[in-house]
Length: 227
Image (cartoon, rainbow, N blue to C red):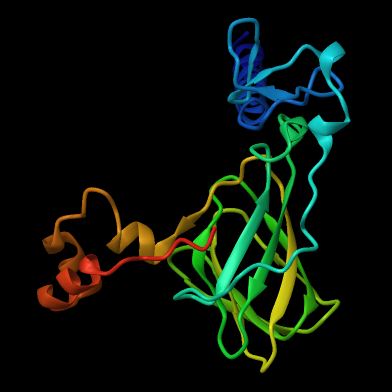
């Protein structure tokens, strides 16, 4: 009797853990699509966006034009990211995918160290030469880097800090796919030194082992958002 009870408890524990794992990921869509709308009067709340009546969906809900257009990179970081996510294509809602175009200025255009809290990124270089990399989580904090040329592809795992830097003498262009319709982006320097309201300088002084005057100087700077 005791052995049977132990087997039952073990089986129950396995089933419970399986349920927790299954419920930890996003559910699969239960319809063909869920075109996002801002009008909430007659909508159904799904994955952060309300859905348009599928019968009213049209081609424009799944369309975006303009990723062929070079962007202006005359800014402090020398890059511009053009996102195409659920905010630009409402039909992406619940589909778990988006794309961006990234333009880099010659001689050091940088997409600064940042993370995507909700997406893995796969990047392909169209023009130029990029030095790219990401840093693994604590405690290793291992830097994994590669120099990419046109046609090369690189993956940045979800949530890890990563960057791209143009080491060539000409402009560079890359496209990246992300595994979320709303991947989010946290640019490290902007978040740490440009938060609103500012983080207590004593916190950053201790965390970065810097002089407090340096911290307050960094907090006083304007941190450019290239997205």
